[in-house]
Image (tube, rainbow, N blue to C red; front, side, top):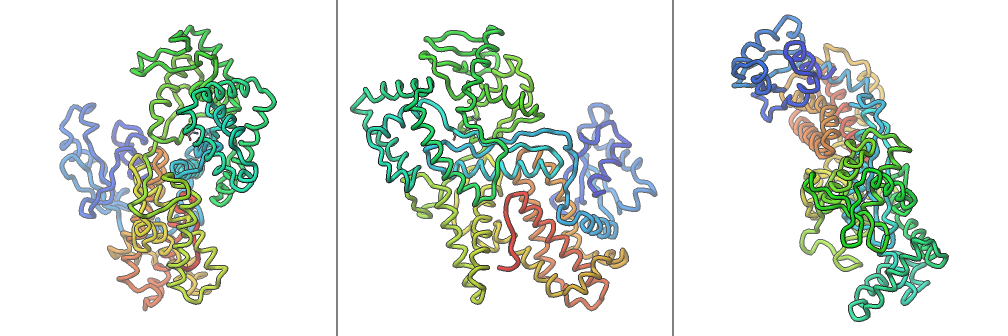
Length: 576
Ligand code: ARG
């Protein structure tokens, strides 16, 4: 058991809070003088009708017994806090043994076994460029899905393709007027974007185009042959391009139903809303009033009877409940759609949809490029393709300058993994609602808060293991407790502590839909390891036991960092 779990169990025996409640408030103090874990007593003050400081003092008395001395060195009271200091020798043995037992999947649990979780992410719009906003949801969603899977949940990855809506009426009209088959064959999305943009320019002076577009969409909704065929073609060519991106990113979805798929279920939505008497007419359109939720009315059907984005989302909820019987339905979509999801979820509640309480919008900020950092094919939209390619090219140059004799094939493979890793990491490193400003220099800094830094640290660990050789590493497999108990230095303990916190960071990251919590944990671990590496000998240790223990520690670091990066969808390399 990890120390944090042991402390939670211990506290649970003495106070009137559940283990979950205790785990939630257990803090990790920023400085070693404050202990390894801190438990704030404020919450107990209410039920116990006592000052939290007094509770802390009494709790310490009760908790400290001969049993706890095996893993707790001491407990200090500081104000309303109980500060726990874990016994160093205990931590050394416990952490390394657990790491050896966990192998390649440290911190994996079955805590969420039986939970069915839908994570909807990526969801690009067909005939539109896959830009960095879609990259954000793609990387974030994949990391969240991985985090839940790692904790035993059954995860369903959904890609809710934007393949429907009135804009396709415009696209059909534009294509028929200005489309170029050859250009479409060469670069479908560029060509479709071109005619779509042209539509918006032309409509300024030719307003009849708007009526034609409305008519074209109406015909599409009626499944008229010509419109349906064009729409199908736009969809197919777009998906081909998206698939290239997904296969490069090694992302696979379980369900890629687009918005169009849900149009057949909309009558059921309407019926349910009618049954509950929720549909009201407003300027010819049908809406649901959401005043009690402090929201504007949600538009369900337009005055011409055509369906809209929100109704398709309501239909999708009904479908997901029926086909997937989910416990949690997560939408990883940008902050600008906050209001949309509030409305959709509110309508679902008001209409008593099943699982109406289990829908969550996980929002994120916007992405910009630092000045002069980027030029792009299509005006001011940054395409993910361009971003990835530039990153790989720059990375390749850096690796080459560090390793003149690296074979070309290895260089190519590493540049792909490191270049892509750098981009993914940049999206995941900070709180998701913060805006991101990309700078190549920062993103590819091998010493910075970056994927290359973590990959470099992993490569460093692997190099140590290689240099130690298989015979020594076999000895490490069966390292004794007595040897492990030698890992008592501050620097070693700091490393151990951060390995031990990895599982907690996974749990917290999952609960908050915030992979950055886990990312920060592995970054802190890497920093701690490199500090240890620079100040202490590993392979040059004179004491054989200490050498084995330090190699075991090195391996544990490597496994933890690799597992963390893998959760983030980032691959590792042997050397760089
Ligand atoms: N396709 C939309 C866009 O690119 C995102 C879809 C979000 N998901 C949803 N269920 N509405 O903006």
